[in-house]
Length: 206
Image (cartoon, rainbow, N blue to C red; front, side, top):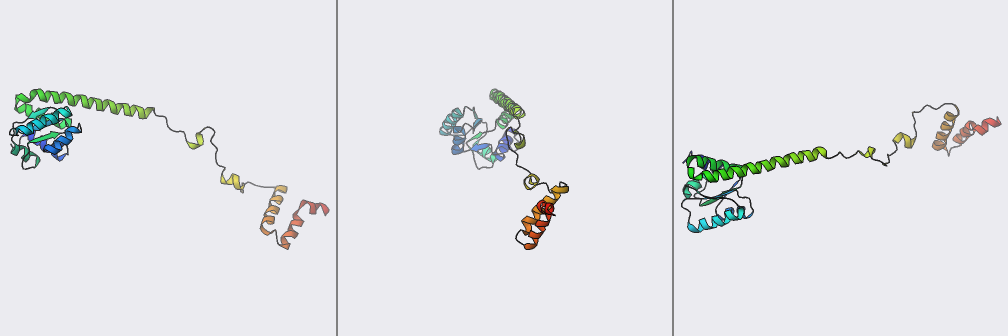
């Protein structure tokens, strides 16, 4: 049984975190509607089989009685023994049943059932992805702050402070120089004399 393909799939599900084993974990997975298939060992007790049937019905998953004993199932998943387990991944469950059906024909019907369910689920996932991509493509981009209608643009630094690099000629240059001197040295006598000399009124008197 070391190279059994079905038991190998259960070991894969265990390593992938898609396998629940034991009464408590299987019950939790089934009540959360996450189980895709529930398995019981060939030598599982009547009470365990009854509980497993209830759990499988709660999850709308098939209950499969396996041709392996508790020791064999436990060895496959790295435990001392396992009477009941459940798989939450439909792809792994369908692949495992296909391998089991290839060895034992009595499992062919349930293998087909899981394969069809897997196809439907994968088809729905593909349609959802296409819808999501289409919605992303149709979603218009948000307009930039500068392109919004009615938005006010902040004045540039050169606009707020005046364009210092703009060439100034003639009277405008003299007025600009006079204003700078006034702001810089408005309280000094020398500045006052300079202002008097530079002002247009003083030139008119001359």
